[in-house]
Figure 1 (spheres, one colour):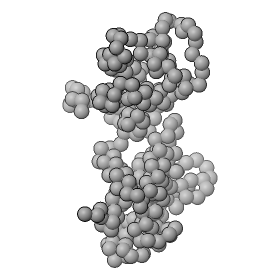
Figure 2 (figure 1 turned 180 degrees about the vertical axis):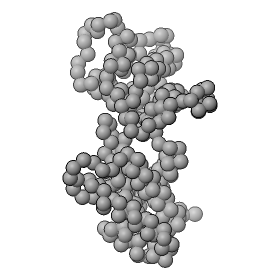
Figure 3 (figure 1 turned 120 degrees about the vertical axis):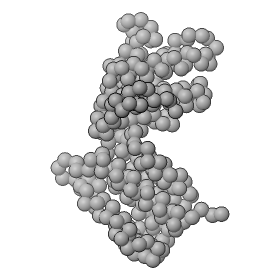
Figure 4 (figure 1 turned 90 degrees about the vertical axis):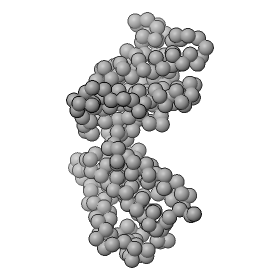
Length: 283
């Protein structure tokens, strides 16, 4: 990991604001653009030192912006023109382009070098207080480290072939939260709790039962403390009560990003609890 700079060590660095989806200062754009350029040029993978790398990334940029590049860009070569585009496009288009460049860089220049590049890019985003990070060629929401760890642990457990359906639904919940420019909090809640419900049905060997009813079946009936069971049922109750999550939405959205993240993290923690207690891995 990149070493913290003075402002981070002393507590002066900007704090992440999960609501500031469009917060992307010009210096962050410029710093990331320069990191991409320097990383590729210094690698000399193409065998030509100081090559103009931007034409290589050009298809990804124009795919996102959905317009044809000029034959003779104003201001000089694409080496200068594409950084200008990155400085002027919308914040979510910048992230879309960043994903494409990351994918291409990994294919052309090797995953090890790319890993180092992603670490430097994420350090820039963190120093700018940006609520997003680049991970495995995707720009995703930068969650609290403990929350992110629980979600990742649940994803690992769901790779069990029995949990293929819940795994796909939980992945959809994460994608809803990461959607740009507007996250879909309601469907994040719906699919996160749906994945939890599916895991419970698989463990109880039931089919299509609502979570609150599955919890009254074995092994949950005797294996889960009544108060814990009630707490889990409340997650399902929230999903049913939140407009747009389980029922038709009338009026503006009521589920915030913070609430969607809480449901996603709580569902992940409950999936981990169920898997470890009732479905331990074979020895």
